[in-house]
Image 1 (tube, one colour):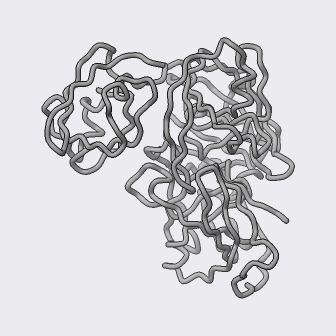
Image 2 (cartoon, helix red, strand yellow):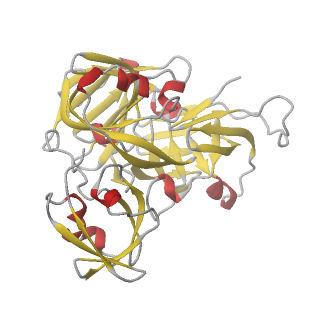
Length: 398
C-alpha cells in the first residue's frame, strides 16, 4: 500500500475490508507547466502565528489560501473548501500522527495555479484543516506539498516575504550550500545537521514546521552529556496539540551554514521523526534566518546570510505560552521550571490586563506584548479576567 505523509501525520489508504466511498472516475494525467516568465512571478506570503508560509493561489480559478509545505508528500485541500466548491469527495482512509488521527478524502485533480506554475489533473487529498494548525484566526484552504514542489527549485526570500518556483538547476543567488535529496519512500526533502561534531541524519527539511529544529529522543541522547537545560513547550498540527521538551543549542551547522542559539524541540520517545526513520526536522525557524533555495533534483540547499542570521532567539522569561483573543490572553501551556509554574499558573487561566493596561485587539502589535521575554528580575502585574491581580517575577530558566 502507498501512504502519504504530512507534517506530524502519516496518511494511509483505507485498509482492505474497510467501508469505501463510491468509486471515483480515474484521475486525469498529472501535468505541470512552468511559464517562460516564471522567474519574474514572485508570490507574496505572510508568516502565520504558527510560523508557516501562507499565500494566495487559485484552484479551478477560485481563490484559495494555502500553506507551502515540503513536509507534505501529497497536496491537499480543506474539506470545507471542497464542499463549498461542490467537489465529489471519495474516501481516502485515516491519517495517523503524534497528535491523533484524522479522516482523509480524495478528489480528482483540479487546476492549481501558483505564481508561474500551473498543475492540472492527478488527485488531491482532502483534510479538515483547523485554525489551530496555524495558530491563526484565519482558516486555510490548501497545503501544497512535495508532490508538486519537488520538481522545481524553490527560492524563498524571507526578508521580502516572497517566493518563486524556478526550473531545477537555476542558482539565482550565491550562498553556502548543504546536501538536499528526496527520501526514497515518501519523497520528503532530506538533509543533515551537525551539533558539536555529532552528525545527525537524515533531517527532514520541512517548510510547514514553524520550529527551528526538532530532533528525536534518540538523536538528542546521542549529543552526550553536554546537552543544555530543557523546559517544555506545546505546538499544534492538523491532528492536535503536541507537547515537547525544548532547549537552546549553542550552535548547529547545516552544510556550510551555522546558526548560533538554535531553539530545539525534543520529541517524546517514538515520536514522528523516529517513525519516519529520521533524526529530526529542520523547520522555518531555521530557514527564515537566510535566503533559501531548495532544489532536491539538483541535490542542494543554498543559504545566503541576512541581517537575521545571527539574531539570537527570544527566550521566555515568564514560562507562559499564550493565545491572543479579542480582549484577553489565554494560557495554553505552562513551561516546566519557569516562574509561572512556580506561581501556580494553569492552562486555561485568562489575563485581561498587563501592568494595568487592558488587553485589546491591538495587543500583539503593542510593545507591551514583549513582557513575556523581558529582562529577568522584572515584576509584571497580570490582571485576571476572573478578578484579582497576580505578580510574576521574570527569570531565566532554560
